[in-house]
Image (cartoon, rainbow, N blue to C red; front, side, top):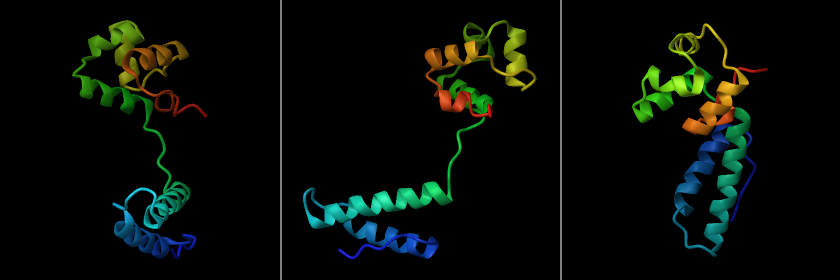
Length: 119
């Protein structure tokens, strides 16, 4: 096992090439240990250099609506009147904490996504 730190994208590509070699290794082998170490190094490098931020709260709601085949009317239970739902979906009104809680509990939208715009 010859593992080195990942310091740049060239090192990252080399780590991915090596990971392909050891990826299907039998558990408990040296190759399996190498695979786990490479995955950890790759994740750390990517998280530092290519972070993925949570989606915009409204986009998260729309995505969940699409996933579950929901309409704006279905959101009234979580947000309030049809006018309020429209204001939220058109980004004319921010989500309240109460709405965030209801959307999280009722539609399983992660808090991280619903609170992403709050600094």
